[in-house]
Image (cartoon, rainbow, N blue to C red; front, side, top):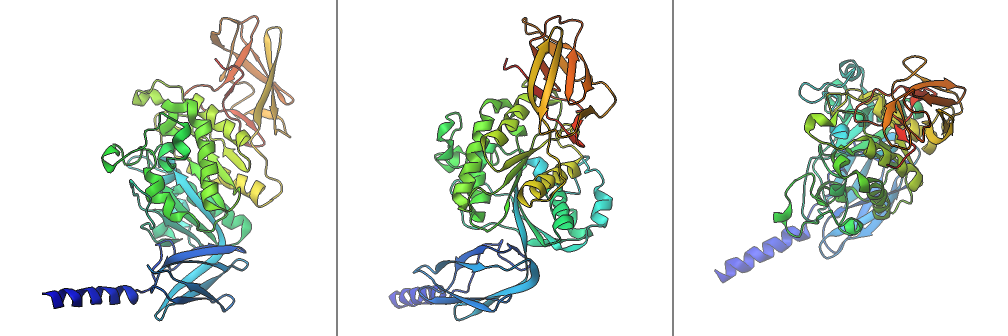
Length: 466
């Protein structure tokens, strides 16, 4: 028996010594690497050896030492956009990754409205998806969807595979991410890779670390696996299982569509999302990469017995782009669904995120910004509202007036008001309020936003802090 045990130990050591090169699943055939950068690669191979990495685009060879456990980490310099290329790894046995494209890579994360596929959810379609899938064939637009995974502690790999856009594959793509990537492809003309890590119903807290959540004492950090009461809402579990393995994958930036789950906890959201963005940037060590996010679309939350006005969460979201540099918010006031938390207009969500990226990250001229509420002046019985980032006049999309404005006097009771536009100002007046001191626009759960500028909707807003 002792001899057999010794033989088994030697055999196991031999297997470990001759281990084949393996890497986290996002490093695979068909992947997209960020162009013109130092692209990081990592994995495991034969222990205590020098491994060779050869890139076909420049025939350059890189040498990297593996540690006693066979772990290694290296980087390769990527060229201008192009491909397909290959990378060969050799630790005595060759492993080749093929059909690699070099282009623009974005991480796409959030909850169900990011996760929602082009084929939609049951009885919840994506508008225009059938025709868009039919015409989606594009070998240079690819998506890697991270399989749902909730973990107590950080892990090192994910499940998923790279898929190129075509009628069969695109049905399973995140709709918001697909429309974002399609717009980048059409304008930039380079390969685009989208890595989607999202889970419906997930809380912002779930995508953060215990260290970042110290500032938010209401977030209960699990102390053991038994403390995980919700696989997608418990703090830290999705950072551990879905985001942590991706950190370090060289990319251009992040798009984010999340917030619905945090509506009842809206008071901390601006600080929390700001903390999360800074935390992701710190972990990735790619500087202040762009982070663009969707403002949640209007929906009647009373249908799920929530008594919080979701406009308060939208207000928190609108603060983040002022709090954190190199961020931007895509407004979806015209893209909601009164009776559904999963609006059909995913093209608007993806394209408006792309407009932010194309304008701010890629420097494409001619793309306007969402106008924002700036200030209000009260003259007699009229509130006069001004906006910033509005080079053109604001206007009402459904006519010359709007029914989405309210004003209040010193009694803090809001009354429906008439609203009209003159040049770049909105004038608001109610016969019920002789001396208004506050004005609100679409500051309710559900509203079909009608205030626009340059073809883009204006966010709901209020002048008060009541």
